[in-house]
Length: 171
Image (cartoon, rainbow, N blue to C red; front, side, top):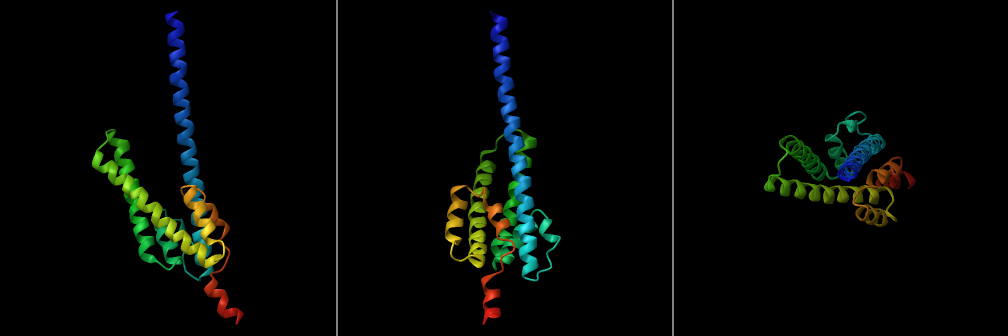
């Protein structure tokens, strides 16, 4: 009877371990896919505006600045990049130290929330520049999905020109 309990307990522990590995793999996959979509969108939008950002858009932290520059707000892009770097550094710190420092953990949560807000503002400006009519809807869906669909929306709008660019040419 004791052997059966040990077997059942080890199966539960293995299931929890496999679930953790599956969640970790899903997070890594989403991070890579969103990075590729966001970088490709930043590269293409920058090319449409005649910026020389073809390869700079693929630099992980710098592409946040480039998106802010395309949205005509370099300061927000720079702050987003710095906060993203702080998030990465704090995550690496927590990974290697294996202990929770409450103050640093609260700082990490605050950085994540502020980065989400800034990325949403930058995305809304980009949506408004490209499709003014549905920008609010895309921003609402972005907020509801907690930013998961933001790289997909940016990738979908990468080839649309800025409304300010197309207005003088049509006159």
